[in-house]
Each structure stands twice: as C-alpha cells, then as structure tokens.
Image (cartoon, rainbow, N blue to C red; front, side, top):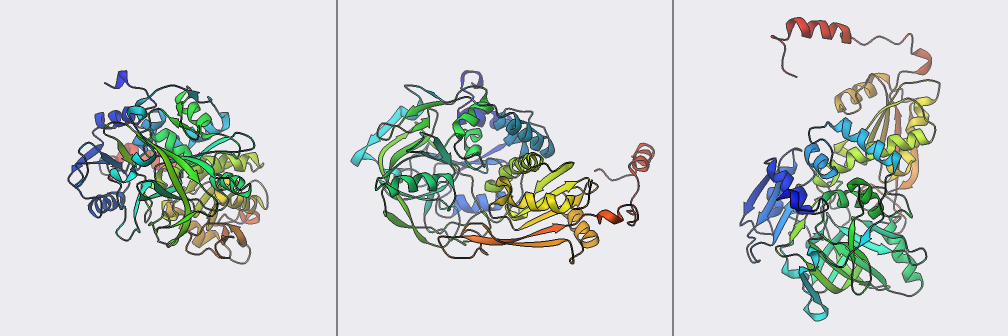
Length: 480
C-alpha cells in the first residue's frame, strides 16, 4: 500500500506510523471533552503513540481526528524521511545541515488531487460538518486550525507564505484566524487592508507533517515554505489553485477552504489553551474569514498539533528545529566554538534557550548569550538565555541549573533586556494589544574567563576512568 502512495500524502506517513505500531485508535470519544481529555493525558509525557479518533458521536463515521503526531523523535524522523531511530542531537544536526544547504524545489501546480473528491461552494459550504474538537476543557470554541496551513500571497511581490496560525470555526461559512504582530501572515494581511482591499486566504486542516512543520518555523521573510518543503521531499510539492483566490494548496490536503478577510471585519475569538501553558490571550476580536469554497477528501482527517502546558505536540517538534536554527545563526554572526544548543520543553521550546560554548576570549560567553536571545530564531517570546561551558550538557536541565548555581556571578553575569519581541500569549508581556513586548534575561553561567585555569575542578570521574570501570564492572552497574 505504501509503495503506491505519494510520499507527500499525510496517509503515506500515517501508514509508516501504523507499521511501527505507533498509533492508538480510539472510537466513540466525544469532541467536547473526551478527545481533548485523552490527548491532554497522553501529551504529559513525550514519546507516547499518536492518537487517531474515529466514530465521533454526532458525526459521520470515517471523519477522523489525528493528534499527538510529533511528540516522538521517531515520528518526526519518519516525516522528514531520515533514519527513524536517530537521536535528538542527530535531528538537530540534520536541521542545521538542511538550513545551511537550503535545498528548495518550487511547487508544481497540478490539475487534480484527492482534496478535490468533495467540493462545496457558496451557500453549500459547511465547515461545521467536521468533528472539530474542543481541545481543552476551558476553550472558547472549536479550533480546526492547529496543525494547519494559513496561506496568503503578498500583493506586491507575489510571495506565497503559509504559517501555522490558530483557526477557530464559528458558523458554516465563518472562521477566525489569530496572527501575532510581526508574523508574516499579519504583515501580508495589513498590506491588503491598507489599500482598502480584502485579503485572500486559504486554510488547510490536514497535511503531511513535513509540510506542516515548516508552517511553525522561522522561514525567512520573502521565502516560501512550499519551496523549503520541496527541499525536504526532494521534489516539488504538488499544489492546486483554489478557484476563487488562486491560492495554492497541497493536492493531498485532507480539508482546505478559501475566502477573504475584509478590513475591520472581526469576530470574538478564543480563548484557547496555548503553548505557554495558559489562557493568556483570553477572548478578543480577531480577523474573520468569510469562506467561499470548501474542499475535502473522502473520510477526511483533521490533524491537530495542540498547544498546552509543556511538553506538548505544538512545542516538541519545534525544539530541535529551533536549536539548529539558533546554532546556525550564532555561527553566521561570527560566534565561534558553539558546542550545543537546546531549547527546553518547559519553556515551550521558546522561553528558555541554553547555549554551550568552548570559551576562547573574554566576553565570548556574553556575546553568545546576547546574540542567541535576539537572533531571528531565538527572539520571539524568549525569557531566559543561559550560556554554559562545553563540559555541560545543554539538554540536561539539572546540569544547566548546577552551572547556574556554581559558575554564575550575579554582579557580572546577568543582563536584563527590555522591550523585546513577544506575544499576548506570553502571560508576562507588556505594552498593550498593539505593541506586545517583554523583558528577558541573559545568564552567563560559564567559568569566569580569567579564572579558567584556577577554577575548582569538577568532582567527577574522568571519561577515561569511566570507560575502564564500565569495561570491568558493567555487570554490577545500573543500566543507563
């Protein structure tokens, strides 16, 4: 079956996951409490199987909901087409290589595809027919867009951009989209509205994870995520042009709809439990999408990547990418001897970044921290940036805190930076609705450069002694 499927199809990846026995099928869970409740419990520990919900009460059998998709390194690797058993650090290095080499293939427009199996226009459109879940107990509605693509085209340059912005369904032909200030979609929308024109938009709610992952990453302004996705597949992404807007959507999309966002047309949206672990955004007016066309496959699958208290499906996959991106951007800025980068799960893979370096000169560690906190991949909603020596494992929060407790001097090693790029989803942002900023801390937890040779040595066996002990006494040692 897999051999006859396109590798760009969500169902190709799903078949791989099924072969690995890495998906749990659940029938009969209701969409108001039980789908979200099961998912919440499953996401509290990364590595649990993906979840496929079917036979949702009140909805047609075969209309399914897939979630907990990218909460294991194996499933991420399968989506990217790399060795399934690779480690997290190997995945970081893969992202570094991918971004450094920047392979691209421009999308190819085709005349057909599975998404055209069902097409509704005008008054026949009904996005409420799908079992869109209420993902959290206190959510203000049903969010069809979490693992989604929100697609727009720049009216000046023709640049096609897609991002993973949250999309709530309200009426058969009305949805809303929430885009934070500074995000590419909001910048494009503003261009149309400043001209007094409606902004064309298309939304995809179900697509191959590799295409979706790029929607949540910091692809550079003016660069198309479709081109980057083609680089992952090694071939152009096949797209069809939506009939009203002409916007391209993947031909293997599960559900896709298009419409317009008119100037000053807003609907009360939210709240949604978000990636920071709070309902920090509350309920507020957000841009309304007036839907013209709906397309969907037979037995469509809504795909969710759900934000929640970390760790969660929304942050786990982002972490390894962001580590690779920050690492590359530090090197591009001229910071040498970066030995590791980790964005900790507790901070939603954004709010805490650790950088390990081999110190070469006075000020090296401070330089690394300041740049990591403000480079494009590390700047959005960051709170803590910690720099440690290369003997510290940046992925081990215990080791990082030990370095902070024993190598950090508050007189010299801490910088507070004010007025930085944030979002209303950050519960500690300030300056109101239109200028959402935060303050952040850069911590130098490296040995003082001028005391490197006299600093107390670490009370731990050398690697050479470790190896000798393991070779002789492995039969009595605990399994690592």
